Length: 205
Image 1 (tube, rainbow, N blue to C red):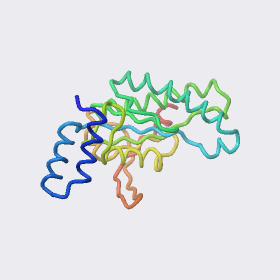
Image 2 (cartoon, helix red, strand yellow):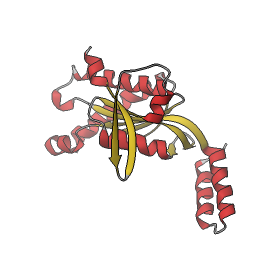
Image 3 (tube, rainbow, N blue to C red):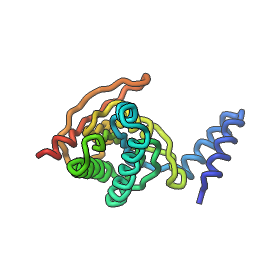
Image 4 (cartoon, rainbow, N blue to C red):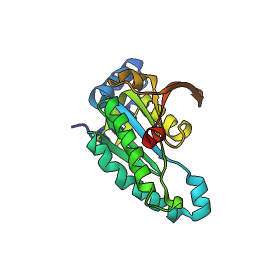
């Protein structure tokens, strides 16, 4: 099975190769050995700067740890792969967009339920981005590609707390219709057509 070290070696070979045909062959090899089509989910916790300024980093890190232990079994429960945690983000992938969306809704529900039992200053609220498409997956420990980048932009920069933003590519893969609001974003020079699912509104029904 191709490893992370193999992946790094191929990247280095690509960066040192001067012949276009040879580079194209290495590109094809990387996609052949590491490529997959997946739904990518990126979760971001809201309020980092505000909470750390007011309560300190230990306070916020304790919330991050609680997010991690809550998120992992939910991702697993929808047959997803938890790829990594970075800072206050969760990165996961699923074989279908339906599974990714169900996981995102359950994550919001889980944190909303938990927030009833915690002081307001420990409440966890999340924003989520979901995209679908071809990505490079390395030993289920990291992944790369446009769907990862777009899901990051949606989850980290564009979605509000309680919102799930899905790209048009992701929405087109859904087999179960869901109420959503279409919108258009431009960020970092990238135009992203997305649909917004208000998870907080669904939780309150």
